[in-house]
Length: 377
Image (tube, rainbow, N blue to C red; front, top):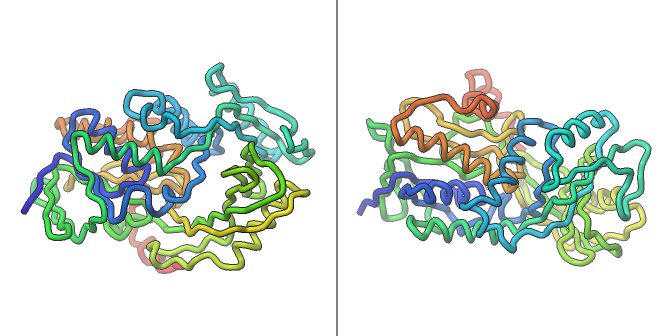
């Protein structure tokens, strides 16, 4: 039996679900496919969901600004309602970032989204070697809840296939695709890969890498109501409940696919305690567990967004580097604009400001293919 759709999206994490919901809202017939349940694996499954604006990369900051606006728009407002907790965030930068912080404030600070330079905040005392930025409207999010709601929007006029493995993709002469699923075949005019760390399994010519994101849940004897990021130390803490915080830890193993990653071990437990002690020197910490998160990374840590070539109706939205939840609404809007033009027969380049996300920069050259064997853990 064959099922026909205009668009099939592989991957029901926050990125794939956002993109599918955006396309469905525009009247397209969409199928969203996942090998598990929505947001059950990868970065979406375990994320603390911190949504903040400042980024050292101006392009990523621009994407986040667009995402913040989209969250209040017609497609995403119901999905995000009640799933966000406004907490504010303290970003502690090195002194060399002071000018960048001031430029970000000048460009993005507003009554709706205030951003201020501060000298310490709350329990975090000022440090002579840090430049502090406080974003009062930063939020933490329940990423799995938001993803489930977005899947609900897709179901209203499309299809969500859970626990469904894509076994093969057969490209037709007109550029459309026929997907072999478990016992069924699904035909689509356009295929979107939004499957994060599994992307290279379906499209090996992309120069992407799977990296572990070990996420420690740590019990401390102090309150952590305010998330904090110490950029020079690459450390952060996000409050989960009471005195329990989540913190990313090193080392972060690398592989070609998630199944090849080693699981968390004693190294990560020790590292998590050291990071918490750095952020709050007086805190006593005990690691409760470490979640085996992972995601897909590009060489420049920017998302990979766009059509792969001129012969297939194949669009990719991947390489979110562990923070796709804050980009997802913007990724959905940008992708939907490009996909809509393609389906209407209009061929055009992406907006100039988004060309830094192009797929072309992530395609393997002959030399890169030879080096790809060094990507293992």
